[in-house]
Amino acid sequence: MKHLLLLAMLAACGNQLEAAPERPVKLVPITDTLCVTKGSAKIGAAVVEPTMRAVALGTRGNAAALDWIYKGDTVDTRELASGSARRQVGLKLRAQNGCNLIYVMWRLDPKPQIEVSVKLNSGKATHAECGADGYMKVRPTKSWKPPVLASGDRHTLRAAIARDDLTAWVDEKVVWRGKLPAAARTLTGPAGIRSDNLAFELVGLAAPPVEGGETSCRNVAGD
Image 1 (tube, rainbow, N blue to C red):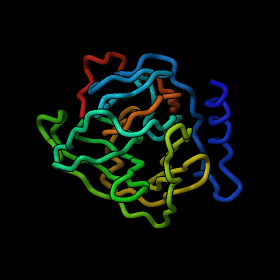
Image 2 (image 1 turned 180 degrees about the vertical axis):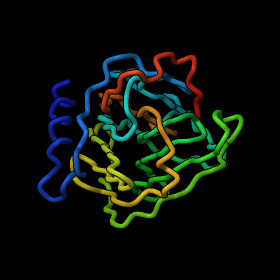
Image 3 (image 1 turned 90 degrees about the vertical axis):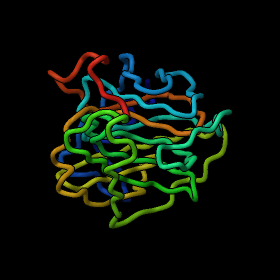
């Protein structure tokens, strides 16, 4: 909890090398149960299933931070809908549903990198309806390599959107900066997390709170 409180303060201040987006939002540590739509995930517990998807209800999806400890590959491997067995963990922003959202992913394959993509499928909400359709990879204006992962390493992946600009940090150092397509403005929804074929400890998740958002996990369409 202390780590996430420090993270929230850093999110408001940025770092000395790269300025944070204008009007930075306040990130609040998530203490409620996550709405898990695939696999299993709990704050403070290990994620061991090859596919995990979750959102934090009552949050605003313009920013989020994931505090995690890398443990290695999951025992079982599961391919994505595209057919690739990708290893990755990351954030879901503006997660309107499983077919319309923004991903900020820390990918290990084919080489460690941060990748941002927007998934848009108008009129569709569930994975059964859209599958792997609608992905648009966003090219960064600047990017830096994230650290090489070793079992037991603890890292924080944070991302924030200001207007159409998205910035991502690893351990408070900027690793990705770019501009989202105009269509991403239509997305509204909470923050969340996603992982594929990676085992890790979910130390914490932080995001800006919002009043009046969805409160029932039963109404969330998973991806």
